[in-house]
Image 1 (cartoon, helix red, strand yellow):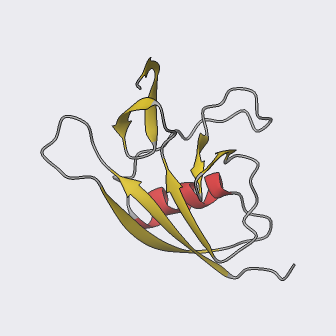
Image 2 (cartoon, one colour):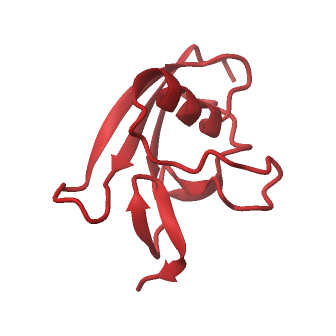
Image 3 (cartoon, rainbow, N blue to C red):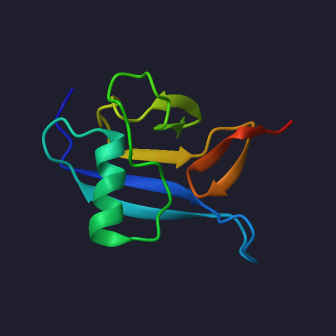
Length: 111
């Protein structure tokens, strides 16, 4: 597999309680070494868009589940998912109430 220099990440954006419609926003991120999806989100938050909502804490060993979200439609621990391709779509986990963007309320299952 070839190294990826840049990644395009399309992220579901929505804030509960506001009069905004859900939608998607796309960001370009430079990839440094074996960068994870969570590290790319941190880059977006620090360098491009500080309004992005995602859980920044993670255990790094698939235990706490804080970083779980849908990556290209599949539930993934983003703290360990290394960027291997040029494009990803990130969405909140299905079946939970959305608080903001990629953050869900673990205590409020829906459906």
